[in-house]
Amino acid sequence: MIFQGTKNYQINILVTILFMGLVPLLSVSFVDIFWGFGVLTVGILHGANDLEIISKNYKGKFNRLYFKSILLYLAVVLLGAAFFFTLPGLALIIFVLFSSYHFGEQHWEERLPMRPSNFIFYILYGAFIFFLMFCLQYEAVADVIEKISGYYIAYPFFLYILMTLGALLLMSMIFHPVLRQHFVKEVFLLILLGGIFYVGSLLFAFAFYFVVWHSIPSLKDQLKFLYGAMNLNSLVKYLKSSSLYWLASLVSLFMVYQYVDFEADYFMPLFFSFLAAITFPHTVVIGLMKHKNG
Image (cartoon, rainbow, N blue to C red; front, side, top):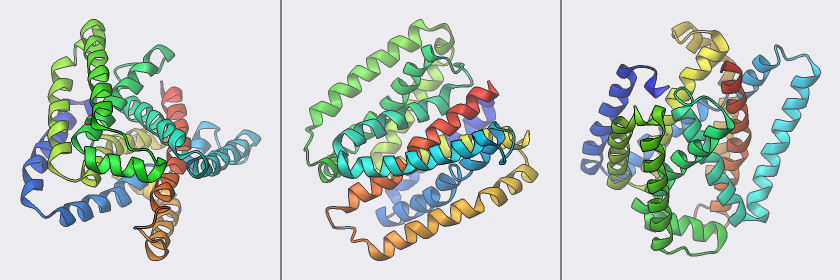
């Protein structure tokens, strides 16, 4: 977790400041390729071990609950993909809500225990991150949404939601005794993230947050849950157990790259179908992991 120690927080802050200064000096294509590679490696890797986490939750791979969980996991993957093709607008809203909860949970659960009363704040924080990105990358975001849903959404819509979320977030952090302790750090972080989201492309904005502020901290939590410690030995074990799923994901993406027309109208629904298919069940699995840890 980012705030498990001041050192981790400081490193992430320094990395954020570094790339906020570097990105304007580099070509957009280079930055996008570099951080796209980060998503394909660290980003996908952090979700590649879900089945191992399920096995740990049910103390082995040879019992009825484990097999039922695998079947449910696969069913959610297929339903999530189908959802984006049948009801893309509604699916996109649910995707953003799930992702908001997942990002907020990862960022806050160590300081705010996983209780239903805190779930709304997880969503609130994650949604603020998303809408901050949406506002600062409005043209690219509006184009993506229009390709997926067929609806064009004007800038004021995103701005009003961002302002509402910001006001709710501010009030929550001022009046909640635990959140108030982290107010200055969080405001500073959000200002830096605003800078990161502004200086590059939409791909860079999402990939940077996803890799640096979400995937790496999540990997650390998973190592501790699965192997009891975060060290080189546990990392090697994690890579071994997740390598098959990770390679399968990369091969699938390579096939998409080879045979899918990126300019076609169906590309965006296809891309977000893939994201939704892995995000929906992954969010549930990680939530169960954190609940068991708690």
